[in-house]
Structures are given as C-alpha cells and as structure tokens.
Image 1 (cartoon, rainbow, N blue to C red):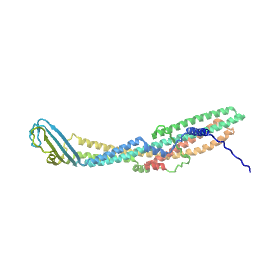
Image 2: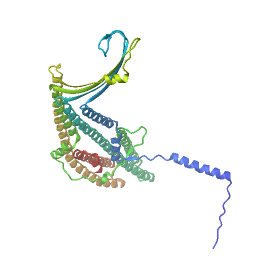
Image 3: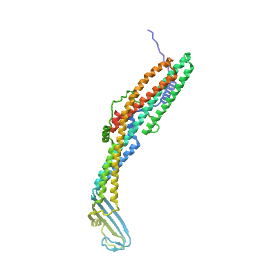
Length: 465
C-alpha cells in the first residue's frame, strides 16, 4: 500500500494576518451585496397591523375615552359639593367691629374660615337621566369604535385583493412573454438552419416585444397596487413591503347561495353600525327625560361652618383674645334647605326640551336610514355573489377549453402549419381567459368574505376562513 505524505508550508505571522484580513473583507463585501429579505405580508398580517397602528382608529378610541369621562362626570355631579374658604384683610378708616358691632375708625386685621357643603335632593330626576344617557353614549362610542375598525378592515380587504389581482395579471403576462420568447428562440434556430424565412423571425420578435410591453405595464400596475395597500396600512417611510401570494388555484369555491333576508336578520343583530345608532337613540330619549327636569321644582340642602379672627392694631388697645381662642369662640354652624320653583327662565328649559326632542327624532331617522342602507348593501352583495358564481363557472370552463385549443394551435405553429398571427391570436385569447377566470374568482372570494363579515362582525373569524 502506498503512503502519501502531505507537507504543509509553515506560514509566517504576517502572512496569516494578511489572509485573515482578506477573509474578513470578503465576508463584509458579501454581506453588503446580499439583499435584505423582504417579509411577505399575509392578509392577517395586514389587518392585525392596521388595527394596532391606524391613526384614525386611535382617534376613535380617544372619542370613546371622552364618553367614559362624560359618564364619570355625570355620576360625580350627583355627589355633595364641599368647599373650604378663607380670607384675610386689613382695614383702614371706617369699619365695623365684629366683636361689638359698632363703628370704629381704628386699623384692624380680620381673618375668617368657612366650610360649605350642598346637596341636590331633587331636580326632576335630571341627574339620573343624564347618567343613563351618558351610559348609552359610552356604549355607542364602543360600537362606533368597532364600526371604524370594521370599515378599515373592509378597505384593507379590498386593497389586498386588488394586489392579488394585479399580481395575478403580472404572472399571466409573464407566462405570455415566456411563451413568445420560447417560440422566438426556436424560430431563430430554424432561421439559422434555413428551414424558415427571416420574415417569420421578425414577426415573432414583434409579438414578443408586444408581450414584453404588456408584462412591463402589468408589473407597474402590481407595484402601484402594493404601494396603495402600503399607504393604507400607514407604514413607516422606507419600510420594505410585499404581499404573500396565496395558492389561488387550490382555493375551492363552496357551492352555496345566500338569501338576503336571512343574512340581514343576522347582520342587524350583529353589526355594530346599527348598535351604535340604537344606543345613541336610547341616549337621546334619556336626554329628553333629563330636559323635562327643568320644568320641575328643585330642592337643595346645605350646611356650613364659619369662624374668624379679629384684631385691632394701634396704641392704647387693651388685651385681645388670642388667635386660637377667637377661632374657637367665633365658631358658628348653619343648616338649610332651599326650594327653587321655575316660573320663567327665558325659555331655557323649553329650548333644551325641544332640542332634545329634535335629536331624538334625528336618531330615529338615522337608524331607519342605516337599516335601509344595510339591507341594500346586503342585497347587492348576495345578488353579486350568486351572479358571480355563474360568471366564475363560465370563466373556468372557458379557460379549460382555451388551454386545450392553445395546445393544439401551438403544435400546429411549431409544425409550420399556421402563421404567427394565428398563433398570437390564440395566445391572446388564452390570456384573456386566464385574466377573466382570475377576476371572477377573486371577486367571488371577496364577496363571500364580505357576506361572512356581515354575519359575524369579527375579522378574526374572517381570517381563519
């Protein structure tokens, strides 16, 4: 058995350092040349990010917080008030001596302290009705926040599927370009061997050029759709963004039909857009009841504590009680009840009542108008879905026929039986069938998701499906 000895040349420290620096520089250059991997966003990623970071949605949350503050204010307004007061003064010239109640011209100092409390015993139940109205307004604010969130989700859903459609057109245009370039390459080889005329090559170059232009336009439209979705998400400037393309070919279209009345009956009990207006209507009814309180007598009870200090400044003044003893001796208390019967208040109570009634009537009309709008939207969505199923079925069948037809035309073209014009016509027809099948399928999917959203009102269930 032969033995092979391998000898390693001893490397000097200077050469080792040079080799090490070369390796480090190589990896630094490679790391710079490698592009950063852009995360592809799914529909769930887009919706979750928007719900957490959308500025308009955050502003809507602030309005809900304001309604909560108004409710706290209405509740605290029914509690007794408590105020502590104090004043101090130096009098010169003519004044009243609080000890003797006589007129004096001596300079003096006075200091008083008071503690007052009052409580509304009865005000025509205005306070209680105001609290109830504030509760309903808070509930309306919470539902309005959900409405803003749902509107944002629907907009993202539409923009997301616009991206899918634009990217689908881009992929279809790329396939058309690949077919043309494949045939152009084949014809170039046959022209070189003299089996086909040069004119056939020029014709195919023209068709490939048209397909390249169509692909460029489709790619730009896809980029524009991605940019629109990115702007809707309000991403930070400079953020890399792209959409993950789902396997649309594996997406199954369920064989279901939607009934408008059935969907509306569920949506009218589920969607926050009707709940919000209904809560506003309940609040306006309580506001009318609160406004009626302005016509009733009001009863208020209260109490107060008072004490003070008085000292004369000047020569020839005898001994005066100390500060602490005067505060103790001058202490007084009072309890009282007041009755206020409204006779004429410049039509303030009447104006408030009329305004409350007008707001209630407006909310009633607003609720009915929203119900009509919701029914119309659901009716159109159901009709569009049911019609879209027929369109998609026809488009899918048309695509299958065009695939078979194009395969036959392609074989004839490669055999030289037909010319470039006939081949291009068949290829264009196939492209139209592909885009039409994609359009009808995406429209059907988004219409189905919209109807499911009407019946659930929760985007988590929408994403899971």
